[in-house]
Length: 257
Image (cartoon, rainbow, N blue to C red; front, side, top):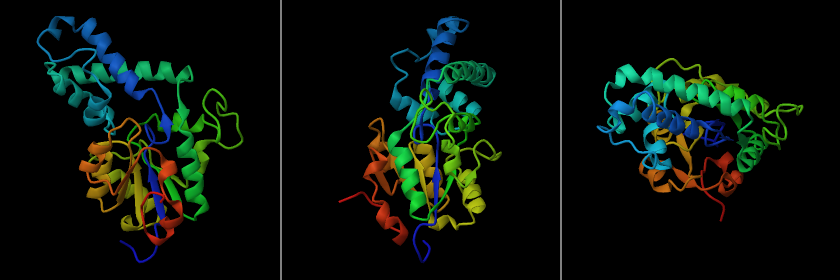
């Protein structure tokens, strides 16, 4: 911990800043494959459309690089030849994600926009650090105060403009829970890791923050509070409106009274 307050805030994108179609794309891609070209192996797996729940997404896929997430998901459901199928799965997901994104099926979380602006007003430097190469697409198309359908990037200020640093998709090392991407963001902010907090909705992201010596603020939008707490989050909230921004400058991460 530094001697002063928090000087840097590092944000994940999917599930924290943006309500994106990532989870839907992964779920739909596996369904298409298991009911299509992989139907012959389906009976020997644990997969079912109902079994691919939001909790599975959070525990197995969320926050991970694309291919690693694909491998882990296939292994979770007992799909054979994980290595041979992971690329097919990941590419199918990416095609669906691109289709959903181009149709404008995403929006900013209003509480996240309010929190980012409040953090900046408090004099804290901000960064985005997503393992996804799609993060910039979303952030450039969301006008501050609007959604993709409303702002669509036509606003003079887009969400990406609210950040001092963007390292999304640039980290080439191991994925979360390795802390590399967050340490990279802290370095580019020129802030010591101990003076940064990370905002994450994924178990792997919370663990990455703690592994790097950064504070972790968990956002349990889908009710996964216990998972984030078990991963070591310093504070877990259902909405970022709950965070007491006034005490961040004195190095406290807590909810409002």
